[in-house]
Length: 207
Image (cartoon, rainbow, N blue to C red; front, side, top):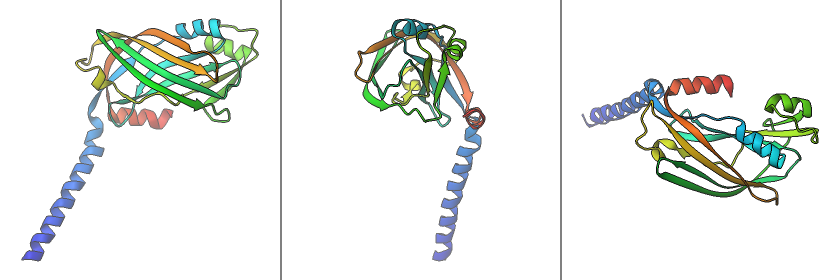
């Protein structure tokens, strides 16, 4: 009798674990998640290129497939090979709220990585839309490391699906031992919704 009760208990526990796992990885795929979509433009990058001959193009943040966390999408436009870049801090300001992420992290550039592309002057003009005739070769680094992973569902508490609001983003960074550069601009943030399964499909086909 004792053996039967123990066996039933073990089978019950295993069954519960299996059911929860199946629910999480099948039905759970269809749960809706808030997606804070940042609307961006090239305008700030063009201004930076005209002033510094190099720039960061900050796309905004993309949502990870497994939850509410976001990771940054950004590119660097470099007129020369630099060894490092340092992210000093990134500030978000919206409504009456403000959050400052102190980073102070130095990251090495890797030029033989798939994220680095080399453009001629003509190719660069087609890509970014402006000509910098004094620079013949451009190094464009994509999907930059070093940005914090952010749960915007927490910091944008109270924002509902369908809301649109303005967020000021300020990023301070520098190359090697050069002076610090500030990129500051306003983004419209759209609170959309996405389904986990859609993220997985997009990740599989596009990354």
